[in-house]
Length: 110
Image (cartoon, rainbow, N blue to C red; front, side, top):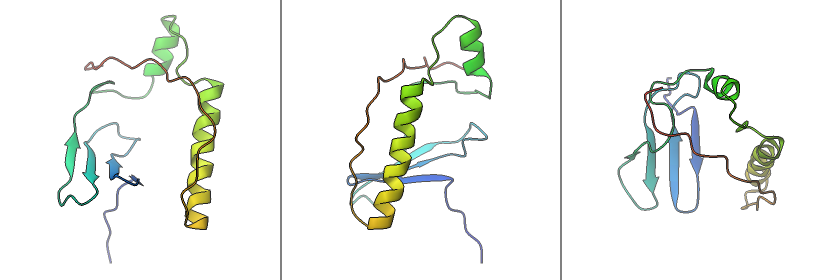
């Protein structure tokens, strides 16, 4: 038996989202709304189209503030723990932490 499940797939109350393998930095982000029959490609609005590892370090070397702050790391952990709790209980779980959103990476070819 074979499968071709997505590396990351998130299901919400209004839509499902599939993102490409984060280790290869390529591919389309897909979204399918509740009740829809087709996946739609989500147009890129930020980031490095041909990006690879190391851009964060290059930004730091150029004097930019770090995007991955401790508060953001804690919030990401809270989201992941909330997902696990939701999966275990079968109920929606509220994420209680917040953090300031980092500045958007301008859409460039990298």
